Image 1: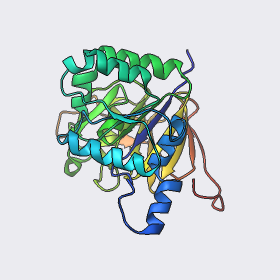
Image 2: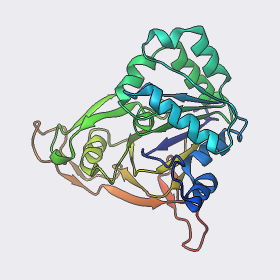
Image 3: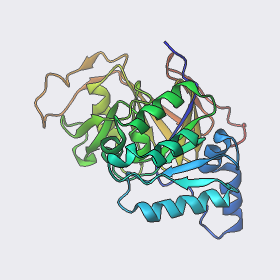
Length: 287
């Protein structure tokens, strides 16, 4: 299996964008915030960062917010890739922008828009190739932008129907990291149930539930480090001793026995291949 050279940074949504006026808050954003880590992984403030607001229903506003946030961090080379149709993903200007970027930052919104307008296009093929083959190339995504990174992608589902078969809706993602299922806004929106069902459907995959203002830096397609102010909930179904998902009719309560769940926070690490956790010592500094 080919070693992946690029870096993925899925984010749980509502990440700090440095818009508060409080001085201490702004300093924390610049020194510790998630977007600071995105810039650092991309090569620093002179890296070419391309914002992709395809998932958003207000792409112009979202683009301006990110341009302002990256500017606050000192970035001098920020662009917008405005993809609003599949045809836009085949335009030469768009292709050139993706080829020359150090980092693509996918916004939140509706993850299905990303796969419908970018999936299978020339831009998608370039993303896959650069991510696999170029060290230092970064693909970051928040909320919908994070969820679209996987192959089996959560497309929707109500937390009020948690643990009921059929509560989660799945769709095809961009297949950047096919071994995962990613859910976002995880704590705030109570999405434990729908991620559990997603893992029950695909017990060979690992579920990541990302809290808001929390993300993972994933290197080599395997080595994950938690960043941000919240938690990442990891769902590992490899040791399930009872999983009746395939036998049930829709609307029926589910049973899952021996689902392994980890709760990780800033600085903790997870190895996708071995499924091992490395917990940061309590006395270690916030990263």
